[in-house]
Length: 413
Image (cartoon, rainbow, N blue to C red; front, side):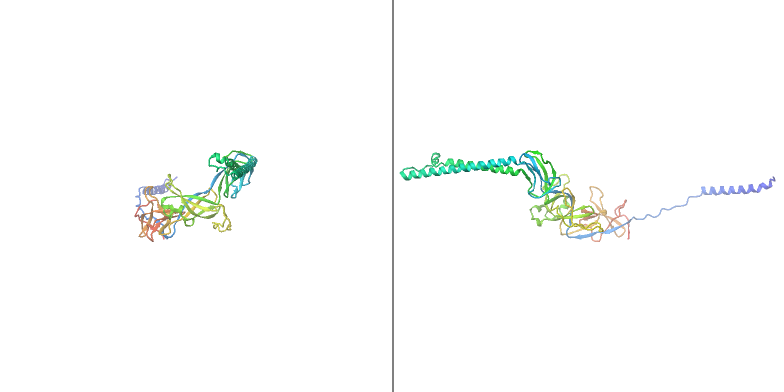
């Protein structure tokens, strides 16, 4: 092969390799381009105006429904249970004066019959004694009229014997004793029927048909359904909002602060009307709260319900009972005078346990300013504050991970 024919391809390949090497060296040793940080931007926040309100303030709390009256129904006499009412079951309903059980009355009827016989016998003995006393007096008067010399009887025991007065007194006392025995026998016979003086329900049954019970044996635990009450534990700052709270027990029922009890059942919310009845006698040593007792009349009664939360469902015409043990929400009417501020719950921030909470407000549309606030209460998604913020103040509702007082912000439109 001719050497001159290979020269030009070799020259062309060398030029390509040299060019590639030069390009690679330029890329490797080229200087880094200058970079600049973008200017920092202030955080974008959302705000809402403070809602200034006046008038009655509702004090909200929660508690568990409990009966006003609850007793252990116990046997007062001994014997075997021979009758049991259908209502003597857990949850059974009964009326005032209803008989829930009956102890075998046979022995107690016999005791009544014996006592009645003793009363009859004592009455006969008293009549005999009175007849003899009358005859003795007639004899004495005939003797005195015939001779004119019979002395007047004296007041000594011997003198009273003349007219059989001690015998009459003894017969009278025997009659009274027999009547007392008869009264006791009749009372014991009545006690064989176990009755409750109020309308209510059975919480727990403890004895049944055929059981032998002694005096004092528990038969059932029952509670009244005419009234129920809820103990609402309130911190002192909330309790102070209820007018004349510490004198509620002395006020007439109509003058006590009204309250509304609400409870959700299924997809509906039901309401009952009640009133503050009293304040329990001592401050809770553990929580340092004031225990306010709210009473509700007819908690097991049926009434129209509050509107369903789902409008597509028809409205019910009855409501479930406010049963014992129900955990319910209570709104008590507080003071009517003065104003207060309402802000979203998320706008209130707690810096530290020993420091008061704050809200972030906007100053001049571009600066965050912390303001210390005094919360009254939080109801659902709203927090009620003492009126320390000015009218027209806007509070920040955005949760900022990093913030400082007087920092620059941007307010969303």
